Length: 146
Image (cartoon, rainbow, N blue to C red; front, side, top):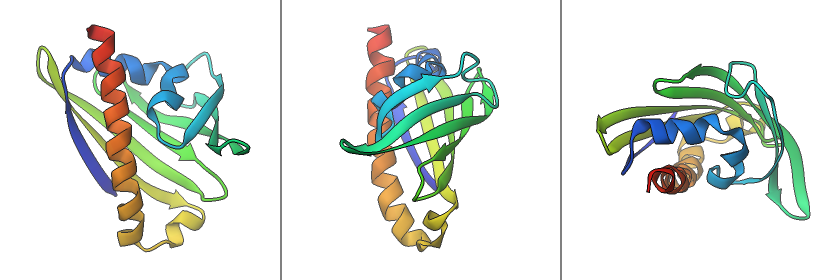
């Protein structure tokens, strides 16, 4: 699993609010080009976001499914991006003060061709991608409380 952590200048509730809004997913998840639909129950376990990945016009339609949701601090999802495969992603949010929190994202390929890529190579791709993902997530959450 590849782990990336970032300090965010807002409450953990602001970050969790972004995670709970499935329509923002394409704004902060690097590689997601658009959202096609969000289940009404998002982010309840089993709820899905139908999204497209890639760059236009070469977009592939797929989905992300919630495995677990703790409204007090985390979301666990299965992100699909075939033909590359699927990844297990967990995002934890821990308050470190009234106006700051730590956000940690842990991810690795767990199904499909991506699992055949050696771990050091996967890490070299996932880590910078998730640093940017957390940067975008922070921008959204911090603006909600500005």
